[in-house]
Length: 269
Image 1: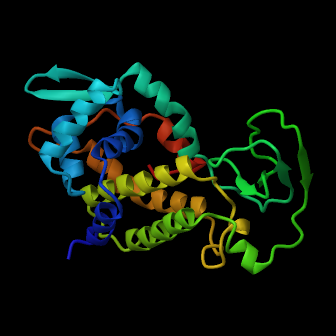
Image 2 (image 1 turned 60 degrees about the vertical axis):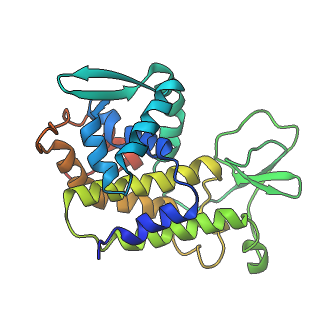
């Protein structure tokens, strides 16, 4: 059986697959550090490994062009796509949140504030709870900073929404499957795309919480640290595939230094 089948099946089963969103994930993860442009044939090869049909990819690229996300150019027989200036601007903030380094030390101080958003803090009794060192969204009318001394298991299990908990459990399941993948470059490239696509959706919808506040069955590991470790594992073979030549698929330009700043990890050469 294809080792990626369970992950691909889960992706298609959870909701209607938005191929255009998957394409944006590829641009952010596989293209921007490699000169910023990708041929339709390489893009099709990668997404085909994930089960995306050529017609669905053409429709997605057409939509992204109409919406101002991408620009295209012809080079010989092949079309190449890159993020447009407006698409790149929209993606920059998301990139910093997706690839931020894992927290290295436990949270000592917490902030309970009148200002917050569902993407940056936990809603708690009409206020917002977040690590005190997290970036502030504005000057709040009220903010209390202190230590979290008690957290009953029943409350810990109810702090995050059911959707957030489900997303983290699905991420955990994917991470376990990625650890057993064979060392095939295209498979690793597809797996890294799937990993970042799921992680991107979590990071942009929900607060990036330390394990202290996660339900009991999710609190053993820091999700960001586990994603960073999986990313480090999948990256050498993925980058090898981006360097490869296959028929009409030319090698992409060499990776720039931004690759090594992702999750602030020193990746193998």
